[in-house]
Image (tube, rainbow, N blue to C red; front, side, top):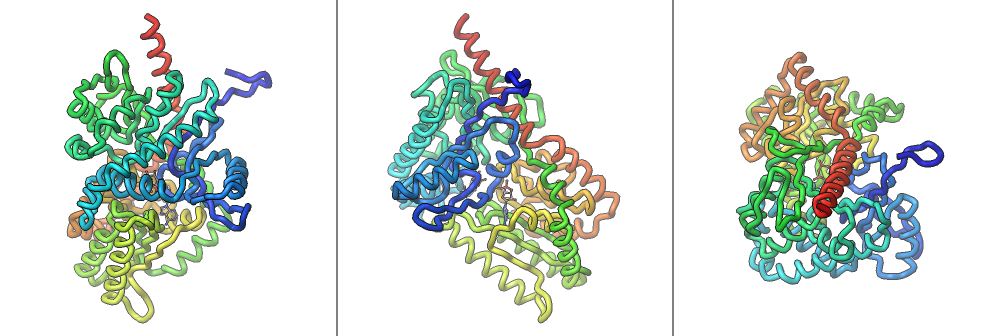
Length: 500
Ligand code: ADP
Ligand code: G6P
């Protein structure tokens, strides 16, 4: 399609996610500053450019007053963002509670938090009620801004109840839903008291997407085992209505469609050419000269396996005394979900382990681990990726893990090694180039560190090329285009079917 001025029409895309790409910080009664939010969902979606995108979500802050809400709405509009205002109680029950204390650990096979399992079980119903209420609030904002022909793309575990809310209001809306976490085995999903309601609601969408074939398979088998609905090669069909199910990556050609997620790899490659970044690279090289640099970049989250990674590094130092003053681990961990008790415990656990190891192997002039609890800006992050010899991504479970993609995109000069958890979705796309490890086995991870540090230049080159090809070929833009085009086709096919 073309406009009158000859430029192509860009489809309007309403992205709906709990987290907006920017988080707001209040500076005065009616003044706000906006900071880029961290997380894979934001990274992937920021790489999507060729749509007329409006992003609907929560700005990460409680704004009880009208003056503040008006000013924030205006500031966000400049970034094409539309806020959903959630009050403190809803955030507590929906975001901290149901989303991040129940769904998140469950979907990553970590179970409910050990110490307050009973309390969590008791609060299930009230938290699920808040979850539904919050989803309805997102739906109300979507309905307010929806124009005929828009594609509404809902994201992640926070908004599993949203497709149903949207379709109840307007059955003609094109609704897609994409999960950025694993979808667990149906045996795990079965334990959720709200298991059926969540599945039914997701099935109200026209197209449902997952990172890997395994997650899609688990979803379909949960529908079969819990709802008694059979899966088809296309998706899930219930009383003549098809919800198409698709995955980003799969080994066998079991599903018809795929749309590999990615990053905006050119943005990273280009950043390395910026003089300020080159200067920073030079400084880092001087600072760590004579030492190999190992890097971890994660949100400070229990799924990322940060304590396990650090213990594996300790084991490596223990077993390889000749490396002790020749290697440094930089662990940059941005704090996240800090009101959830499990996350607070993790922070002190990591600090304790790092302190102990630095005390054990450090000297007056150098420590083996530099741990920073903070977010780095984009340019600083690119410079760090570029000087790294070995990246350590040791998630206990991870939907995909885009840090591994970012590292690869910045390694054309150095061709460093990626050590990657076999439990990250990225193991299916970057597995052939990375050293795959079981993050729970610290002996194996320690041995992989030794293997990576001793790897020949030829082997590093070969592994890097494999991964670089994938990361530069499958971009975020391509992922979104394929998802949206698939969603458009699905709706047209459904209309044809009902008109027959
Ligand atoms: P998740 O989705 O669980 O957060 P991903 O690896 O897919 O994991 O994405 C994390 C995103 O957050 C990446 O884009 C990464 O650059 C960013 N990020 C993570 N930690 C930091 C940090 N300490 N500083 C800056 N950005 C970070
Ligand atoms: C993961 C989730 C995202 C979330 C991000 C950051 O990537 O899949 O939905 O936005 O973590 O977490 P936060 O709770 O800060 O939004």
